Length: 321
Image (cartoon, rainbow, N blue to C red):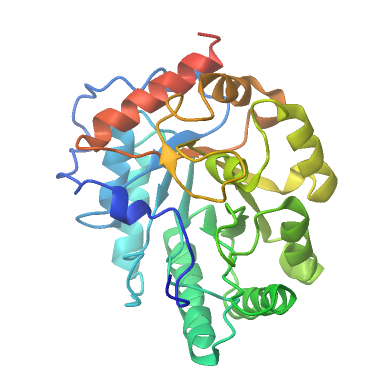
């Protein structure tokens, strides 16, 4: 793997090309379940093909109440700014949906922990641009993977923290930065609760109030946390290390990987190694009831139909089905 990238969930590579977005007032024909029953925002990663505002009708089509997007092409360095007209069009489109919470996922190329000065500086500038776009669009959160330390773990954590500090100081705004727990492949940071707590502890308190954690079910399983046999123990360990108040978002993904394999391989809900019962517990866990939950499961050849089926399944679990 090239040191310029972080092993990640390869969302862009797995997705079928998005079709034309439906009209915002088109009849909803897909069954994503009853969104009125959502106690917390629930949705999926949505394509912005055609413009950032086109994610909103795609979310509406599957009855989503939460949404994740990319604000630029995730596998390219090319940056862009969000102009006022785009921001207004995005917010107007979103207001015509049931979406209550919206986040972005940052570029896969960003590596704030890199020991290579040129790459690290480019990563900081790209990360700042991500924050600016999120602030301009009025997003609730930006999800970011910790970096790839490559040389010495402790040094990588320090570089990662310093990069976050530099970016947050330079780009004030209301978007919350959520650091995502990783599967721990290679030299990627952030696969244990303790290491994530170490990273966050290095951020000054005034900036740390703008931060939180995103927990991906497939990642923590691959990192060695047994959601099947030690579900409550895992959450106790999370609370001890990070505190439940830090939890800003859940990425709901089943896994093709084995427990502790450190491989990031997403699967459809209830159809991978985690299985349906884990997601039933998550959807009925009172501690998690109001935490935003976003699918990053494979979409196959019919993205909207697949997302609707997964959301319907999760809402069924929440209803005790």
